[in-house]
Length: 124
Image (cartoon, rainbow, N blue to C red; front, side, top):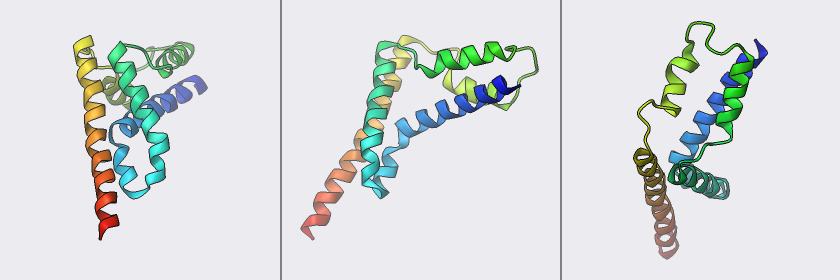
């Protein structure tokens, strides 16, 4: 049972990292020092998508899931909803490139807003 709990926690952490990489730039609007943590997360997420790599959390999730008996039980919330968000069945290398570009684009817009907002604020 402990393996299943840890597996679920790792999957939630994985989803939170994905959300942070995609939209964490919005936190930078409020707390600029978050950029030092967010920018490496964006680079990591984009690079993993561009090269079709596997996040180190994925093998850890699989190992823990195997230790817990895998899919012996009915699907729980984590397996039914969160895992399908992180690992869609239709994920292709082309889609991974699009996802990587999306991470860069969304955060690029936010960082431009932060940068130019800071410059405009200094002029006033």
